Length: 226
Length: 226
Image (cartoon, rainbow over all chains, first blue to last red; front, side):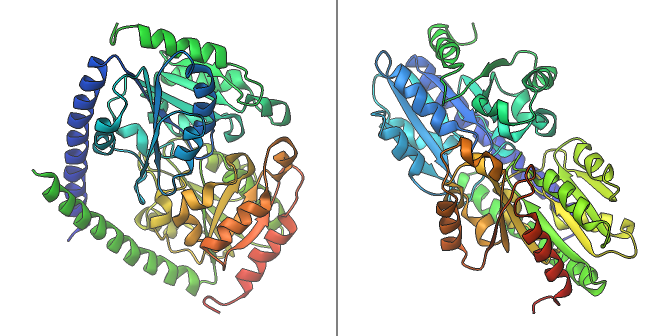
């Protein structure tokens, strides 16, 4: 098979997958919106602090709101166990090698979700590239970028920043120990996507969590596409 | 098209790509080995410090050895510019969305490489998942894992650790500010791959670089597959 033929087939298959994914994502979105659930797709590099963020959100949200989490990972149940330890129901999807979650994986969990629910957080596989191309039925997309990852990531990995609603800078407590200009990161991200809401957070000091929780609660109350 | 058909086609196409990639990688390897070049595929999450590591290696290697770098990124020439600023020839491959380098991308650079060369470092796209599946013609595969990414990454992203020759823990200067047990990370990585050579490094303090440079020089002198 020539390289040209291969490329052509590859493109068609990828378009089929994306088209099929988009359709399933739309069905998920429609079901979850009808139930008044705010669904958030949480994306980042490995180790940027997605699970820690969800643990801290659980501490702040679980007394007043009903929250559930779907965890995506290549392997292990570790992240779902961490969330369950917070008293929040969590489902682990292990992709067994796949570099992102797809809507069909999320669809399989839907029948198991609690009947009454306010927030559904979906933690994607740790990967700043592939998850950006796949909708999962979410209303909000949040990308985390940790301070130690450096200032230059938005323009090097643009798609995830261009398709997100909020950018959560994490591990801000490490700023004193690193050459890091948070205004530069914000500026670069906002140049790609001016509608990004930016939060500067630290799970160690609690910085930025009041604003972030307020944002999620306000988003829950706001009807979709308002 | 049914999901079943789609999956089947998807598998065939991916196998075609991998098979074709393996063949091109073998050709590259054969050419580079014949010229006595040590080629190293450098992989990690975004922001783990691949380019900084290569900058520091350039400082230490360039007086006694001939070194070149191929940089892989989704977008921007930034990394190649950083390497060139060290007086080392560098080529930037921008994948325009693709989440890993493939051998055919590297093959296009080969005719441009200096005639006399000792080390060729290939910095992959920042991604702990996808690059693991694609050989690029390298003799050594090195995976970087930064301290702030946490202790639990080897078993969550096993393939890159299982297929690598060395694990370079980076940003060790941040250990005092984080809950981090480096012995735990080493143990988990070595359980997956007992032949991994592990280096604990900091580009800030220079920790671990003597050992790492010695390792690359020893690998250069050792015939392949010895």
